[in-house]
Image (spheres, each protein chain N blue to C red):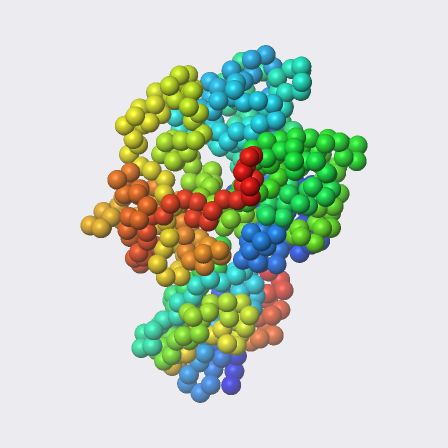
Length: 380
Length: 123
């Protein structure tokens, strides 16, 4: 119990709201968070079929402002930030000097027309304190880093999310497609919308002042297409969608190349470099990395969890499972892990060892369940 | 017929020198949606307190311990075919295995139903 006593658990703005709705609260990233309401499988399926409301207020919301802030961010992130237009969102990562991932994040250009450059960043809850310290230390002193602790973050995800949002805020759906953001005045406060999320479904992340978080959650769930969804289903949804979870599938020993997140290293930056760890990442881009993140499906029904060993045909350890669980959509055990790059091709047979028991698994192309993002210029 | 409970949330229903074992309603509720269960094969000898079966929910794996020593005489094929029966009827159709008791005296230290339900309320 020592660590529980040493680390106080904080309460987020929607704590009472979750409890009233039957949310089972667990400690996660230093907060009490709802792990489930009616059950993970039912909530997972509801999100894939309708719309789920996730409270992700534990995540860190930052605002970075100042002269040449985009250029400054490009020294730490491998993404094209200077070329990111206002209202556009990019998935990127904070890298250490050897190219390891300190955190993965979403950055939105929120510069007002004619105004001072400003970038809104959402970082992981468990890493936010370290991220802020790292950004403060490594960015020029004239960059202002504001931690928006007075704001909650809700994610509305699923095929009916856009219709729900459009009914309440007409025009938002047409205004923004996948990886675009906008804002609205609502009940006297500013509401931020980013058409993104971490389930593989179309949907939005909504940033709202803490004072209005309950009212927003009530408004969204008053639509019968929306149900509150816990962290348990968030984990199974993101696993099916092939999306890595920081601290499990990503850490400071993994690079974007190893993690198979090459899309986060923008084309211009691959040749130009100039970001933390660029030398190593450029070398890995050219020669390949020793290990690669894969997804896999497992024969049978027993889930294989994080930490299980991955073996080749001769029984040699070639990697480890970093996320494992049961896919409610595929009704089969699935997971992610790292293997020697030679074994990363989809279709490769591997053996998993968990608690002395062997399981047959097959490397599978990710996502394991297709994404349904609303991309501009494409029908749904 | 007598029904006993362990602090690890197993129940054991004794009829003569055989007993049926499963996990309690409280246990299934804590685990959430169960997606996999594996009962020990008939003929296997179990020691009291030793690992007897595996149950996995979407979230996590758990061990089921033997509430008493003995030889497994039957495993429930129903829980392998449809593990969700452990959620819907944990203290009935969701039983795990039947045991021929080696020493019925081992049951003396277990809780009766009233004691178990009262204890769970304190958790």
